[in-house]
Image (cartoon, rainbow, N blue to C red; front, side, top):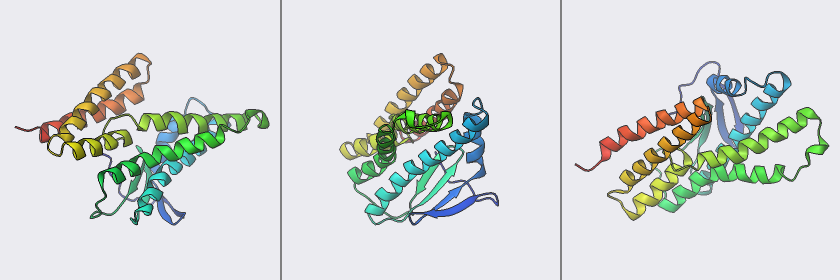
Length: 217
């Protein structure tokens, strides 16, 4: 469901800890859109905090892949980030689950470190940046662990379900994912979080389509 976007002439390319990183221009557009209500210096700090936090998340996945000897590259784009490994590598189910958890897990480590820093040490802008870092790495990490495919939580559920039930595991995963997505849509609409609602509507539709393809006849 999440696919690597085609390269553009406006991509930002660099290496971080030996991993190739590409930032698609739509990443900047969506990040600014999400923080548009902030304005001024706070918006700049928001963009920096989001970029840093998503890079941390993807590096968590990338280092987990590297632990198993598999090279990867990272792409930040309109839906957040992807850590992409070449085809042909087969890990065991619990190793795949570990790779999926490593992204949110890296964010939780960052949250733990930054939560030890006293906001009183900073100016208003510093406090804003600290708040953004804490919020993104905690709540977006929890968000990513929801059992909705293809979020990290949904991928963990898929690995567990298909291990214990090779025939019906993917069906169970899609059913859990679809029900959870519908619940999140309802909660998001009630809180007037329409972007989140639309994102989960898209995932729910994708899950429903996949479920119809794999459901035993």
